[in-house]
Length: 126
Image (tube, rainbow, N blue to C red; front, side, top):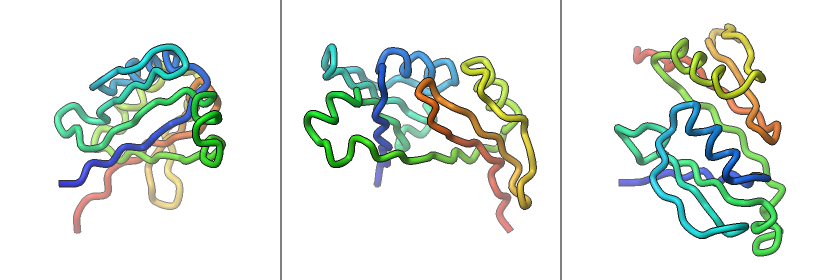
């Protein structure tokens, strides 16, 4: 089995923790304190092999400066796009309408630091 954990470097771990919880991710573990606090979330509580881990960006700058300013972007693919759009809209007012871009039905949103992420409708198997 392979687990995937995407590490996000954020300005305020607690604020971002509240944001991802409000969207509907499940907190699996919290460890450390202060600037060293980190929180791990399951993207899907039924299949926690895909995870997000929040790290304080200042801690990362001190300990791994070569990766601190790397910005990834995540695309979540889901079957129930309208439900996820409603969840995200409760967490941020920086969410786009659901749209169709070149055949991909999707929406994007910003986290408290202004990073962009997106949800898209799962592709149906052929």
